[in-house]
Image (cartoon, rainbow, N blue to C red):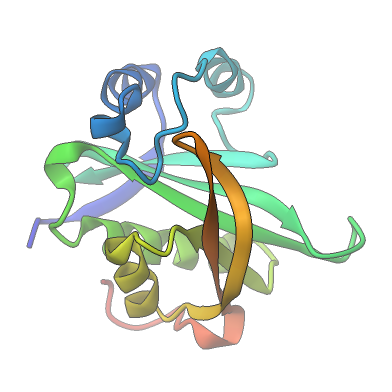
Amino acid sequence: MPGTLALRPVTEADLDVFDAAFQSESGATPHQWFGFTPTAGLREALRARGLLAGADNMLAVTVDGELAGRVEWLERRWGRRDTSLCWEIAIGLLPDWRGRGVGTRAQRELVRYLFTHTRVERVQATTDPENRAEIRCLEKIGFSLEGVVRRAQWRGGRWHDQLLYSILRDEFPLTGRPH
């Protein structure tokens, strides 16, 4: 298992690495490849707010100081704007870091960060039913499967179902041994 995992603010150099790595199906993975996408908005958000404190946010994932990928959290609402906010998390690992337990550790640390530093009661995630690695990861962290969101995502020329997972604040241990 890789060494010390940390989350830190994203830098311009990180975005350069992400652009190079995730602008192909093999780099992004078939479950996250949506075609070529502009990244100017990310760079503007980095300059304006460091990709933090907004509706869409990002931190870099490092292992022993080496860039391994990124985690994101996005505002989602299940009702009125003022009372129904939750976060939806996502992850993108650089190809060399996949399959080594980094995704589980990084997402666990992101959930810990969100429950420690924000007032949300719920963190959710969606994934393709064929993305066995992400399903295992979410279940290891303690997420519960809530159901199938049918034909929710357009990718690769067709509609795909998504599995909706969530974890509530009182289901996640904020203290204890770091993972």
